[in-house]
Amino acid sequence: MAVYSDKVMEHFTNPRNVGEIEDADGVGEVGNPVCGDMMTFYVKVKDNKLDDVKFKTFGCGAAIAVSSMVTEMALGKTLEEVREITPEAVAMELEGLPKNKMHCSNLGAQALNKAVDDYLSKQKVQSNSKSKSGKRKTKTRD
Amino acid sequence: MRVYLDNAMSAPILKEVRETMLPCLQEVSGNPSAFHDWGDAARETIEQAREQVAMLIGADTEEIILTGSGTEANNSAVKGLALARWSKGKHIVVSAIEHFSVLQSARSLEKMGFELSLVPVDSHGIVDPDEVRRAVRKDTVLVSIMHANTEVGTIEPMAEIARITREHGIPLHTDAVATAGTIPVDVKALGVDALSLSANQFYGPHGVGALWVRKGVRIMPLLDGGTQEGGRRAGTENVAGIAGMGKAAQLAREAMQDRMAHLLPIRDRLLTGLPAAIGHVEVSGHPVQRLPGNASFLVEFIEGESMLMMLNMKGVAVSSGSSCMSRALKASHVLLAMGVPHEKAQGSLLLTAGIDNRLQEADYVVEVLPPIVDRLRQMSPLYAKFEKAK
Ligand code: FES
Image 1: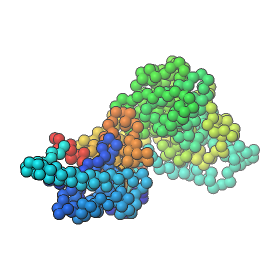
Image 2 (image 1 turned 180 degrees about the horizontal axis):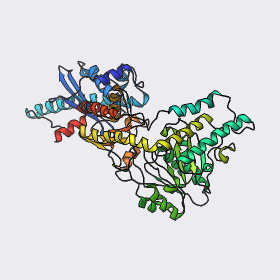
Image 3 (image 1 turned 45 degrees about the horizontal axis):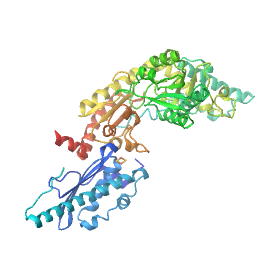
């Protein structure tokens, strides 16, 4: 599979952090099966840092490698540092991606960011509801 | 084990074919248009090949136009037949599952002012002849329907379609690239007016094909600039390639029944074995009206390229119509036309057997694919959703 770098092939063959986190603090889902790509990222946050990151991906070899690489890059990072994981940075870590596969790296970065957003918005809901009524409300996820 | 099941994309060239071609490349080869012994020799080689190709499809020798590929034959047929009738009307009819060399040629004609009607197919990829009847009009100047579709293996009811076009006096072209040399093809029995074929599909070289046009049917040449092929296709001939195609055609005609008898059990082992070994896998295309070497599937919840990459690691070569596989990132127009939903089309898997394959190779695939599918499903959010919904 000469179109992909050794690094992509390595992550595709042995993807890290595949799975779901049952009690995730944030979940980010991007893409949709109708256009062929779909990624779901789960994050667990502790002391403002990503304590655990897992993914599930429906997509090509690059999409799987990207997901795996993103989880590796994100683990242990602060919520601010995580924002610096751009599609370009992911592609670079993977020693490049074919041109028509760059959108797969966009998806990876997006899904991670969305999971972090999800966590932050829940925090807000929680602190708002705490300050208003003193009761904890949990936002229901669809 | 190394298992090559991508014969529709590229098939091996037979030894006899190679041996026929080599002298054409080694010895001084004259230009077939030249007036000397060298030219005569090259011309003889070409004419012999033309006859072999004609015999393969039950045609007259002088009706064969030698081309540089099946794609060129399709381009010449669609554009050349329509443009030759330009003054009679500007409406053409093609099926929704044609090869891009037919579809894009039709689109080019659209840009020139032609009107295009796409005939739909059913969920098995069959063109309903009644749909062709409904599509043709007074000003229709060409109908082009493929004889069989490589991607799903479905063989179309050409003779019935031809009855309709003949009633209306409209020329009918068929792209027989998937069938000529693979299953019996007889232009008279099919009742068509023009037919395209490609040499590599029957173990001849790449870059050679032919277009058969019934005597008396006018066609505008695609390539101008010489009197080769009776002025219907200019350009100095690829003598070695043509000689190879001729030999391959002769061998295909002689061995056709044996080859089909060899391919069918391999195909059927795959068609029954894979859905039995893996859940949520279905055969795409027609169960019976099907090319002898074609085993195509839809594997749910996962994507074709990743399956293909893992199969490659196990030494198995196949292909897929997933959008991730196409440069344009578009899902297979064939599967979509059959009504397959997008996400299911992503899991397209196509295995095409050839004469070099053995039954044990099919068994090997049935053995190695289930754990691959399993692995990818464990990674798939779609599968997780499906499992939770259960
Ligand atoms: S997921 Fe479709 S190209 Fe990568």
